[in-house]
Structures are given as structure tokens and as C-alpha cells.
Image (cartoon, rainbow, N blue to C red; front, side, top):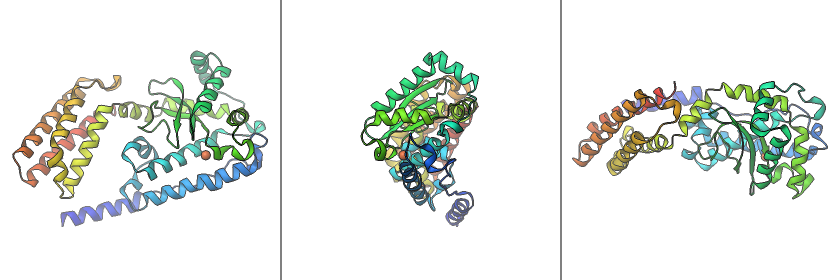
Length: 335
Ligand SMILES: [Fe+2]
């Protein structure tokens, strides 16, 4: 009965809070981006490629619990997700940002926020040097991918790049932060007009980047709580523990104790590692260390119970406690 109520609750929740993604309209007509990008490329890129990411994302999420998560949650845990979800969330997010920051020269915002200009000057010396760094990142990205300007958790600007449809919000990216500018270097973005000449496409794209919009995005990113989430998420020892906890606890809730009975030692090892690891600076506080020590102790208790072949209901009770302790750590890290 309890299981049936739980299934009904999950289904209702999925039904009520799941969302469908839609292709955003372009702010300008396909031909407006000429001569830097030809109308046919824009049309195919937007109405076929981007649309396919949206369609496939909706298909991959349909009827699953993941459909209730936000785009940022889906992106941040990319390493946990299927290839379909990783590629299509990235494809949708990346292209949506790309369309936002492009504008025909005569439509571009003339006002670039001073704080952005100052940050560029302090870190790159000048806009020209920043453009050179972006060109370098975009031209050296092997195969398909993106070049980025991001705001990192320590509120600095950084130029980086990712492969395929990955992006810097994802836990699979080597440099993480909130993107304020992305340059698509997939061949579908330029091949019709520029063929294999990626460098010529990149010179063209700089005519279309609206730095006023980029500077607005920079101001918003600096105060976005997502920055702190990414900082916490970069704490790989905690992330590793979370992965093993999810893979052992959730099956227990569904009555399958095999993962826990075979991986209790691994769960304890990850708890010891996270307890001994150094948290990111803003999470390095006594309450977090205390909660981690409690979590380690609880995992040790579970390990001993598994060794003694304890009953399923005992294991479920103790795993629920461990799961609650993990969430205490998570909440403390939200501050
Ligand atoms: Fe693209």
C-alpha cells in the first residue's frame, strides 16, 4: 500500500510539475544576420538543429522524475545523466544563449556596463585581448564544441571551451561557471557559407556579438545563486559520495537491497574521503565538518550491519538516517 501511494505521488508530481521545453523565437529575421552569417545557415541552425535538441530533450524527459527538475539541475548533474539528456539539455541551453547574444550591427545595444569593461580591462587588458583569447579558444577546440566567456564561482571572468554540447555549468566541464557568452563552433554553424574556414567564421561572428547584452549577463551572473551551487558542486569528494549514496539508497526504497549489501564498504570509503577532504572556502565551517563526521559514523554503522547480515528493514531505517544526514550537509552548504 505504502509503495502504491509513493508511486501515485511520484506520478502526480511528475504530471503537475514537469515541463516541456520550446524553441525560443529568434529576435531578428534569418536574413538580418547577413553578411556575417547567411540566412540559410541561420534558418537550418535554428529551425532544424536547435529544434531537434528541444524535441529530443522533451522525448528523453517525458514521464520521468527528471522532468520536474530545472534546466540548471539537469545541467549540473550531467555526469549522472544519460547521453540523450546530457547532449540535448546542453544543445538547448547553449543555442538559446547563442541567439540571445547575437544581433545585427545596427540593432546592438550601445550601452556596455562599466563594471564589465573594468573586469575585462583588469583581467585581459583590453577588449581586443579578450577577443583574441576567445578566438584562440574557439579555433583550437578540436571537432565540435563551444568557446565560452564565463563568470567563475570566485566572480572572475574566464575564457574556456567545451566539446560537443557540454557547457561550463555541467559537472563534466574542466572550468566551471555561468556562461555570459558562447560561440558555437560546430560545422553546422558555418559550413554552408565558410566551408572549413572556421577562422573566417569567427571573424564574422565578432561583428554580431552584442557586448551590451553580454555585460548585462555578467551583472546578473555575479549575483546568481547558481555560482555558489557550482562552487559546492566542484567539491568532488561530496559529489562522489552523493553518487554512491543515490545508487544504494534509492534501490533500498524500492525494496532492492542488493546494491547496498554489495557496496556498503564503498559507501563508507566515500564517506571517509569526503569527511577528510577540504571543502570549498565558503563551505569550510565547523558545522559542515561536524555533519560530515556524523555522516561517516552513520555509514560505518551501516557497514557493520551489512557485515552482520542485518534485516532489510533495519538497513532501510539506518540508510534513511544517513540520507537525512547527507541532506543536512547539503543544506549547510546552501548558506
Ligand atoms: Fe549549433
